[in-house]
Length: 340
Image (cartoon, helix red, strand yellow):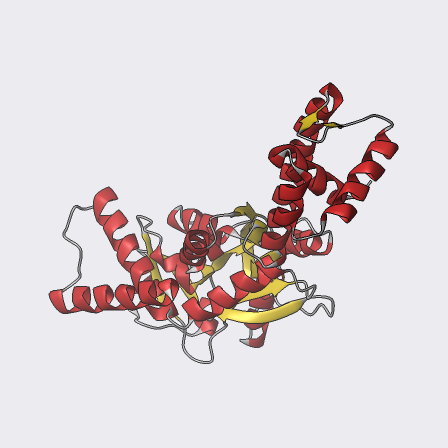
């Protein structure tokens, strides 16, 4: 039994006329009659009562019709869903990321992608960098956003956006009077660090300190970069953090940039080169939107200032009319890119 037998049966059952059914199917009547006879032979029962005047369904034919409609309906849905998934318009997308990465433009990219592809289920997984790589290889996630150096020949890696490393200091720290610091200025401080065993980025920062002439005296280690600010506020040490972390408002913590050459905290997109169309569409959109990354970062910074004013002093946002106009114009251009 083939799908064409079911389709022929359905049309004859709806028309109750072999002549009309043949016209609708755009075939001649004899082959259609033969196909129905073959179907009845396979089922070992008559599906139609045929007279010179009319064609009627037998009780078996009536029952079979319900099943045929259900089967062909499911086949149609399967075809549509398969084609949508194959073109990247439907399916699921599992994204791995660390918490600090979410302080950058990634959330804006996910929101824009979800608006363009509402049939794709996007699931975000917050996990440690090494766990992200393991998850990619195990096909539990489809794409990751990492700061850790990645040298894996089985994965594709490209820079998503660039960030510098800044220093988080207690507000009362003597170095807080400076506008910019050298990494070597931190040689005598206690350091709070990302957990070295989980993060190649943390290992990279430690190596940068060694290159600057000192081994950092690590007092505490945590999993997420934004947790470092709590330890700094508590006076447990200074922290080297990605630039985007400075958008977090933490009472008692100030941030200072480092003199060049400063360590970098660039975020990379990492994914399997298996041609997954859902991933391909997401990567394509991310590349387009990240061309407008400065505007996205401006919005992040503005939102951070608004949250700080709501939770803190209550002073009005420090955004002049000119800066507000620039932000609105950049957001308008970003929305125009998304709609294209």
